[in-house]
Length: 138
Image 1: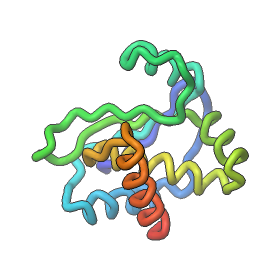
Image 2: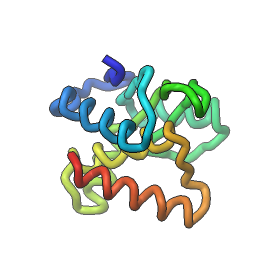
Image 3: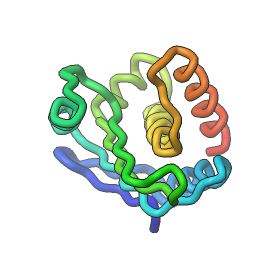
């Protein structure tokens, strides 16, 4: 299966993993790409903070870090690390269901693997629009 799920530093089980995998595959297909392998790793804040500091030299908490291993012309291959405590906090903060917020973060990671950036405000707006579009297809 090209989308696999793992946990590091906590116990967590994704709700309806096959359905989520099928949805993420459809996002990639709609963007004109294919998947070689996407690992989604659910983790603790501390685990993700260590990765954030080690590889990106950031000392702040984040909800997601994405590592892309494929070239733009190849089938997508990468790792998406997601902090479950951050997703829970954001769901409370934005008053949305946890599964919706988790799906938003997951598709956000897939969009990064597809080459989308969120560095500028216009890039962020474009990504948010894509997230909203693909969330409506869940």
